[in-house]
Image (cartoon, rainbow, N blue to C red):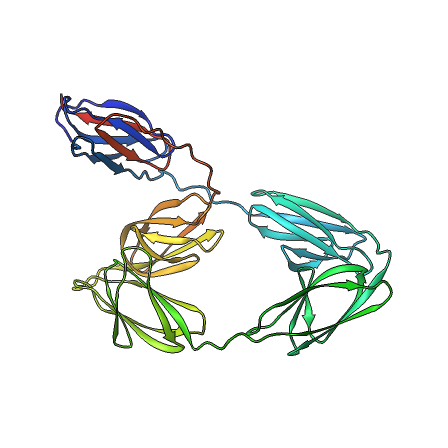
Length: 397
């Protein structure tokens, strides 16, 4: 921070960044300040760039108030005639009329089925704290037929037109005459799929033989640690070190139980048992604790909508949502949730000893960004921020 107390407004951050030209003949910049209404002010130190050099500085602003949680909505479904079986995103929910509660805001598919009527399919949007009404008018079938389905092996799951109907051997009656998509699914076998023609007033027999998948005796183990750089052994054999972000991949590991151990200078050894399954990835995420007297620790529970997002704590990858991070040192930590096609979710959370801090990330779809036009100024200092903020720079006169 300089001693002159002068503050020069350099503009508003747009698209996550602001480029400020620096001239070698001018007095050097020493500090910067980022201000945004509703967020804490951020200040940092700057070093003078060399000719032709670009220096990047990052500023993270924390909200002053806790964001208002997203409220669930609901969907009311009625059918004509009533009593139709209602499927919500392919899952059976009951007979119409019915109300589906605790629905996360978004778009959903509704299907109504009733013997003797054509399946009715529609979509509906659910908003926070509101109820969506869906009416399903059903049309009587002009004609119907049946399917008699056999398979080798038996007791195989039957899926017709995207809906699960039971297991083989199986007879399906009162189906609309015409072409349908039939799928057979069984663990350890390749899926069987074909189109079938249901005759009006008749029964079509389908006999399918499923091909078994090759038997595998190995799987994978992905190991990550916070901090990275830890040495990894599996059953005493050395496999390398964990990267700073991402996972160390242990390939062709025999199925069964194994012991994974991580060691890093200045941290307590970490050891756990992991079970490896055929053609399956098993994950180990280790939060290493400093050696010496043990500090207070707590837990952080992280979930996201949609799920399956990568979670970083203090810029270190720790797993995929939903997950609970144990033995986290007390204090303030930066949490980032990232999923392809969605905007990053960033927040700081306070971890208290013996308590669980909860982070719920409602991810927003990513929006196209406008590329920044590169300038011709030889000396450039770049400051990036995920939002629009005022950017002030203190400099010596």
